[in-house]
Length: 404
Image 1: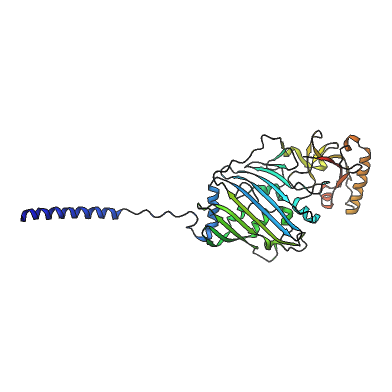
Image 2 (image 1 turned 120 degrees about the vertical axis):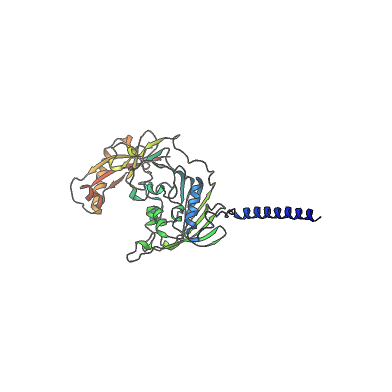
C-alpha cells in the first residue's frame, strides 16, 4: 500500500510538472493585438486625410455633385456626375447647368460664359480626363475636342479645372478634403472645416471672381473657414460631403449681390466596383491643337463653332461648312500701327468695316444666317490692341443651324 501510494504520488508529481510546463509555454506566446481601423482608430485630426486615402485605395467610384447658388430670383444648379478611376488616373463626367430665366444677363454670363451671337454658352457638356489629355464635347456638338498639354491656357481656370489633384476629375469636394480638419465625430459622420482657398480655386473662373476669399485681402493671413459634413462607410471611405460656401458671398459689386446661400454636395458610390471611365474613340474626335484658334485667325468663308470648353469668346473651333456650324467668318480688317482710339471709336471703326464687308461677300456665305441682313463683329480692346501693336476686327454671321 505504501509503495503503491508512493508511485501514485510520483506520477501525480510528474503530471503536475508537465501541466506546469505546458501552462508556462502558453503564457510565453505573444497575444495578437487587435487590428486598428485605418481611419476610425486614428487621431481625429488625421481622419479626413486618411478617409480620402482609403477612398483612393478603393480604385474607383461613381460620383454626383451639385453646386447650388440660391438668390432671390431662384436657384442656379450645376450637376456634375461621372466615374473616377483612381488606379488608372482617368475619369469622365457630364456637366449641366439649370439657370433661372429671371437671372440678370451679367449673372448668366458669370455662370455659363458668353457665346457670341448666341447669348450664353452651352449649359451642358461632357469630358474625359486621363494622364495625358482632356477630351471635351459641348452639349450642342456632335464631335469631341481632344486637348493635350499646351493646347489650352492653363491660367484661365477652365479646362485645367477638369483635371483634379486628389481625383482624376477636378472640381469635386475631394480636392479640399485632404486638408480638412475633423472637429467632431458621431459614428461614421463628421463635422469638419477646411480653408476656403482650395474650394475657391476649383469653382469656375467667372463665378469665383464674384465671391470673396479672405486669403486675397491685404493684411489678412487666414482664409475663410468653410464648414463641412462628411460621412464614411465601414471601410472608412467617403460616401458623402457637403460644404456650405455661403460665407464666401457678399463681395462688393458682385453680380450675385442678392444671393442668400451657396452650397456644394458630393455623393460617392460603387467604391471599387464602378465601371471604367468612358472613351470617345467611337465618336468623331478632333485635335484641338489644330482645330481651336482665335476667330481673328480663321480664314474668310470658313465656318466655326463657339463652344470650345475654354469660356473664351474669341476662341472658336474651325469646322467644315458642310456640317452643322454656329457661324461663318466674312472678313477681317486691320488698322495697322495706329494708336488705340478709345472704346467708342474702335467699335465704330469695326462696325463700318463689317458693314462694307457684308455688302461685298457672296450670298452663299450669308444664306444660312440666323437673321437676315444681320452680322456680328469682334474687335480689339485696348489691351489686345497694345499687345499686338495694332487693332483688328473680324466680321461674321451667326447661323440658324447651331451645332446640334
